[in-house]
Length: 345
Image (cartoon, rainbow, N blue to C red; front, side, top):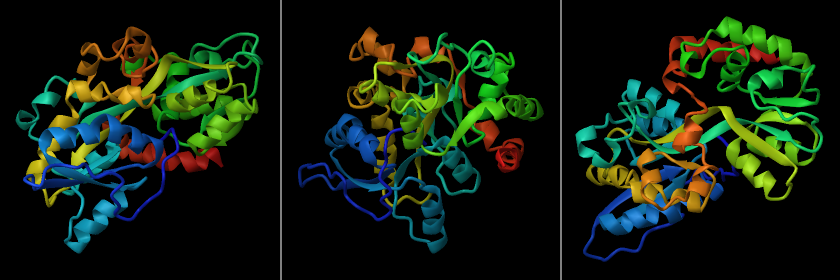
């Protein structure tokens, strides 16, 4: 994922343990991706949810939870309950019997979430976007679409793209005139053909959010694909950088419950509480990510001005393409990923 710095802590550790009355014995172990992001969700969602439910939430951090979920299953000793992870992990885990299917009748707070945002194993926890970022000082014309990014004649300047096919193939197709709601199934041959056209003009294929931020902050490139949270962080120090949600690639991480979770009942209660619109509305107070539950925008807690800055606000979501994790987890998506290494070489 993604975006703001996240600590690579693989050992079980209580980053935050909610203080609850001794009469309450409920507890879960919650796993997220560390750093500023996990600190923000602790304040916005985890601590309030623990207090409401009367449970203790022990936290662990793992930038890539999937190998550990598999290892726990193979050892026959599941330690984790709920994980916040890229949607693809929830889908893969569900298909392999390592993630619990969700009964939506037991998740009233999630029932209003659009079906395209959730899966049978998971619900959206927060949204971020891969957007077109640029330097307003060095560019004579401001790019507002991926077609502009690909148009090196009318928009000269140095460029960078992410060294990953997910999102990058979508941007290539959008630049070639494919409507956002007609992207899937991806025309992989067409996408790679389009990428071959821009490849000579790509100065850097970045591999981390920190690298992309440095490229923009230092003026090493004039425009690039970048996570919205990273651009926002650079903007605080450099007013000459900006981005657009036009044709952004809207993505999310999701909550799912590990199969044979030791605290299954409390895990389900927590997932429902974490989807509560008022708690979801707390997240943008601490970090530049959008709530996973769109109902958060109707609580009155997110101002109209703040909503304009968030990737999942109704206005911004309508300007973007929703990345299909389902397609990327399919055989066609896996083949598209395998093709990437040969392309970048």
